[in-house]
Image (cartoon, rainbow, N blue to C red; front, side, top):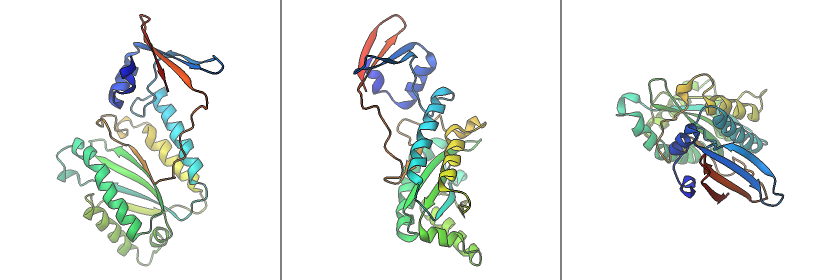
Length: 243
């Protein structure tokens, strides 16, 4: 079943849920069987062990990358729900709108690094959680004397870039490390905690739930040894795929 490697995320999840395929992973150097059992999609869309695996993997990558970063803020961006026909329209637009806002944040607010996670509201529709780093962001978020001015400025930037006016920003507490905030944000958002509706499992093919600045996420670790992955149906039909 070579085509399994090309199917989109939602279909991989359906294949995994069906429990109709088996998977064996073999270390080609040692011949050791690394895994032998049901096919696992390991997608954030599939609640349970697959989602847990993806969550731990991305948290580890982010925590390893954030060390040494300072002057961080936590922020949210939302959509004006009444202005959008459906959640599907927001799924398709969020990537472009974020690119517009990201360029403005770099130019105007001197944002140097960021991590963005998209979540769903109970009634549908998206909102995003942001952890951003930059000295000007940090300075603005700490100006209690002119707080109303920079909060208005931040909300206006969001609205002009296509998001809603309901936006929020605050400094990361100095007594807590950036690693703590990143791990907490991802642990809560990647799995939806006890709120199933927060994970946008109905997102279309190609939807990127996580976005980060270049160099923020460490490259995903892969075994130096090529693994032979044999995916087969329970009737014994096998197809080797090299990952």
